[in-house]
Length: 339
Length: 257
Image (cartoon, rainbow over all chains, first blue to last red; front, side):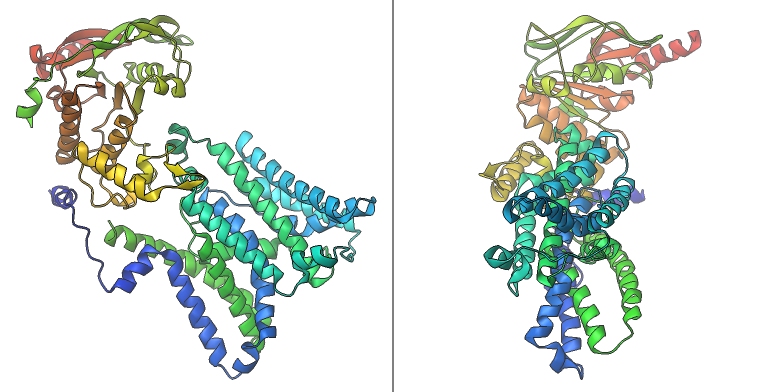
């Protein structure tokens, strides 16, 4: 009897009103909007504090950029992987190893552009191996990329002798690849924009969502699920390798202890806080950008306000879990009010 | 509902699919033995049988997933070898499975166009897909709140209807419906049966309805085949049989077993 009454509401056309205002509806519809509001609130909070003078400077914005740009660039790839129902735990070490891959080509006498092309090709190869092991042998991406991460970390130390190297990428090419003050931010924004467009406006985006949401149904409709996933692993490694070069050209040193698990975790955290589901099927790349902005504001704000640096990790841990809970809660609201 | 579905003014047309003497074994198990069936355009054939009777094997052969060991399949009188699911589909054989049809996270119109998206260059034509999906769904009388709604927000009946509409929209000649009423309440089941009846009346589609609930499907079927232990044991127009007779046949099977 109860199910009969429930069903009666179903075929009628009128969409139900959300409880509350248009803003509430918009927040439900566009998941990334809530994280934008939280980022703005955090920005306002630290601007208004007694150290606001130090927070609102061009130099400090530049520091914010240094944090968020690599998280956003790698996060763009991780977002697409999460949407596909996968994850890349090795991306942080791809970030670390690719500059040294570049160095090993360069040290053999190849010129900078050719060494760069080959290093990027190796990054693509890393993604290809991740993706093929995942899809051909049906090994979970968690295990596959965990192993790849260790492998790449070891390769970094072998290549570098555990010593930093001076990046030989200079001149115009150097400016484009991180040398110019804001170039890393431009890379991040362009990659975020391109990937969001790919997710929302191309077949690839639909296929990625279908592959993560219902792989059986996707395969049944003729979508090559494996190919979609492999391409996304490749994109993620490509972005991670690129971010490694750009970020460390900016710093002026290729550092074998840079990146790593922390970098990967911050990229994934940016995606999750930005509203991407860990279980696949849905997410937004723009949300990931704002997730990264929020994390950068918190880290930088804490530093400026003299909060213990260790507290940052505590906050990130809580923020990730809270974001996941919020995600679950919001999807429940969506199901209730947006049919 | 019964009233409109017993009305057969459209009348079945030419035979579109014929299966002749098909057998299939899996190791020592004979799944299908000498199965022959035929279905005509504008006709709904009910393929009934208990779990394990061989329905799934027969569907998988018709969708190109399995190859039969012997026997042949004819589409419009031409013998065909269904090489793959894609090949069967290209010949106009579409299947709607009971539950894995749709992607919850995608809106209705993207599910409707899944892997057949309309594009301009590399970009999706969201507007055009919304319009065409709404039109196609409206045409076969499916009411949903909005084609932009995520599928997860819809009821089981609406989801099934969308899956059927999607299959029909692909120039299908033969539509296989695998347990379309499974796990559905009476009211929703009724909506799907009415949808099947509307499709039959269009007269351009042969429908094979696979089910194990005899009473639900008898109304909408023109003809009923009963599959028992891999053999077709019964083939008669539904007007000339009854649920009681079919159940009697199935019970006889258990008594001898």
